[in-house]
Image (cartoon, rainbow, N blue to C red):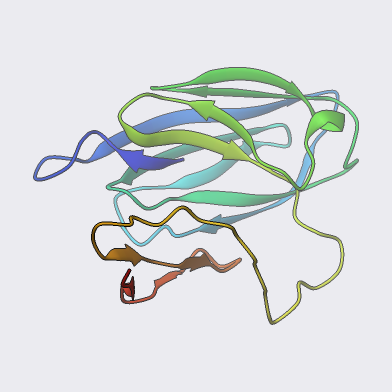
Length: 157
């Protein structure tokens, strides 16, 4: 779960919900970015996880290991978004449930089987302003949920 209600003060989004498996079981649950001691991620049964989270632009969630990586259905129920998703349809690309607000959403994706690389490269064609400076930023999110941003990189016409 991630995002915020809007920009500025009072932007918190409170998430209460469950992730439930039909035709499968969780073998391990590891919370990610649960720094607020009042918020919890608890495996209630072999097939049900209950979570409570608050986001203000960043994200909180959990890594789930499953008995069978591809069989069954994941049923997500939150205060802002709901869905039933076949586990076979979840890949490395995000399944995104829009929840309104400012980039408020639920993202579900499969982690790679092998350890991820420790470097990244990206090439993009961007349209820059011809009558003023263009400031670009780059952000990277690591598997443990930390996010790093660059300072603005200015392009001057």
